[in-house]
Length: 313
Image (cartoon, rainbow, N blue to C red; front, side):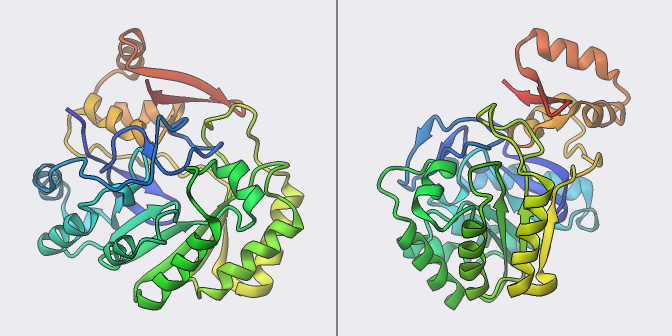
């Protein structure tokens, strides 16, 4: 059975985030070169039903009862693929708002905001995070590797239309990749657009987990500072860097440590030292659990920038 609820995980943007994985691996409209979930197997922009609404709620409610609302800052849609591909997205969000006051967040790559039904679905969320790595077509295509029929100009128009109808918080995230989108031209084009939609916060990030393409590297410190300063000229204190690991405070949502661990690393590869601490909290022996999962080929151990990570096979 595909576990659809995971965490809470420590989010650098959202605090303690209880995740909803509403898209199986890996249906997406992009195949980003830096994606921590790996290359896209099912590249598409067609919205469809993936899971019954009831199956998500039936997993979520016991977790909320077990953890308590005070232990969760956001319930966040952050799946294996692009969450807005789910045609039931708006209905799921409405149903969740009926059972809890915990704010709802969603992390989207922004690619489907040219669709009116997607924009309407997103209005049910308290916070929407928009991925904007580049507004320049050739750079956008190189870094995000979009579905062929997507048009960057229509996407940007859709984002502007969404801003006009949305009353919640909008944040943006730009992943800075060495020698790909770390030029002054790209920084200035990005911030010209981002500042036009009156965002609550603009995050600048770098890859900190194993990317889809091994050759992907974070930009240099000088370039990151340069991006930050260019963004600050337009947004002031609404700019923030996301360049450090999220921390070790991963939590088990059900108490079934192996299943919770697998559900978490399915969308959130975990550093080895964090994995040990996550498993230790259950009273189990981390080395024993991890060795068994590796032997069963349920997980893989990958080295990235001098650190080892566990990802779901």
